[in-house]
Length: 85
Image (cartoon, one colour):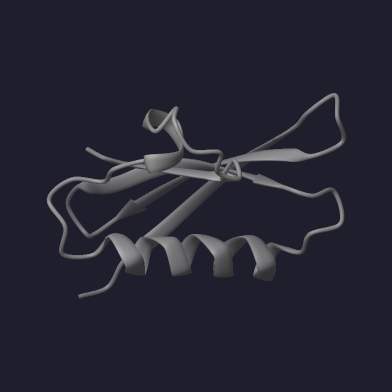
């Protein structure tokens, strides 16, 4: 199946870029999310990060963002969030 990736970016005051992405097939939007990238990151870097994370979510019914809900342990903040439509 062919997937389409749409990107929109916004430069933040910090100099980083917030990238909103939508992964869709020919009929519907399947996933959407946000990734925070450094100012010098290339488009290839950003797309690669999104592809890696999307592949990790394939086949799961829910996406659990452990770094958002686990207040007990100190985890590194993640720079990507993915949601299912």
